[in-house]
Length: 50
Image 1 (cartoon, rainbow, N blue to C red):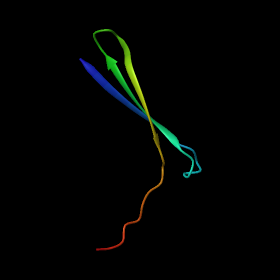
Image 2: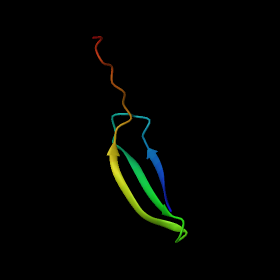
Image 3: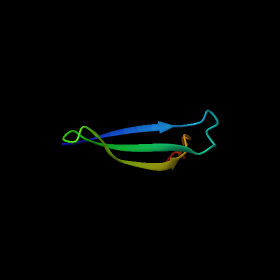
């Protein structure tokens, strides 16, 4: 059985690029078997009212 773990590292300056980490853990092997990194920003957006 595989499980996922997601962590996000962001700067307090939200215009700097942070990193989202996706870890895949194999319970049969007892260790993390894969790790993916994706750049991300911690900014929100304000959508205009419809």
